[in-house]
Image 1: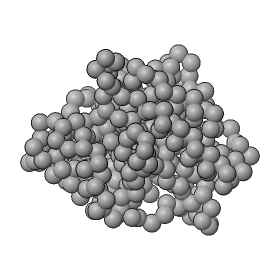
Image 2: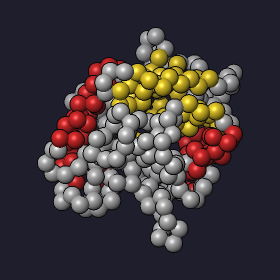
Image 3: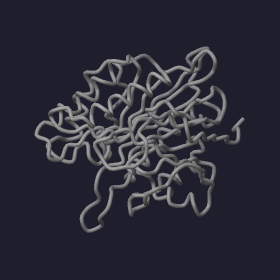
Image 4: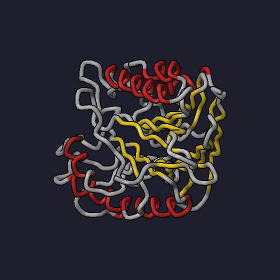
Length: 309
């Protein structure tokens, strides 16, 4: 387990979101080599304090030994000696391996901060990571990671939703941090499949970035967005899943954001890269941008919320 996350001395904390790597097969493909090159370039350009991978690290369907693909991904990220956290997507455990088996593999990596989370609720990988002050061990911000599942039952169709027991887990986790602090802490949430509210950004909110495909959210709305609104801590959510979307949009004070797809072994016409999120100690705001594999920086976005103080 890596050391406790802390703000830098200048009061910043930088997260690099990678998503939809789709490393596939037992033998490294040309597309995989390109993906690993992009990962290297964006890490070197940004040197983040945390790498957050929001699902579909691998293909598992049609692959005899998907654990080998998964180890290749983790080997490549872990060698940077930067703390990393993961959540799973719909393709990670689609066939020939389970989420539990994947998680058991990543436990061997020194820089992994991922936790399996409570065994009595849906999913593998529901956990929170506190970020301490640059000056002491007081918690200044919180990162939530949630397993958004894979596919809905056949009679419903489409993608799985974050279940009610997970929403309740988030509510209780948020209350725990609130009990330890006078006000809700600035927080971010990471998962793979976008919430249904991502569709509402265009009706009621403000948006910047690219939307080149439909939003593949679940048909069922389990109320996580409402829980976040009422908890008053989450400033923004960050997902993957839809490879031709990379926008951030603010809805009722919460920014709903996509990462930039990182992997080449899958559909998508956007230049590959990663999303950067920069937090500021003591402030309810963040800046974000996309760092491309070719060195360009695009899609600057700022979230500036109201102070709770």
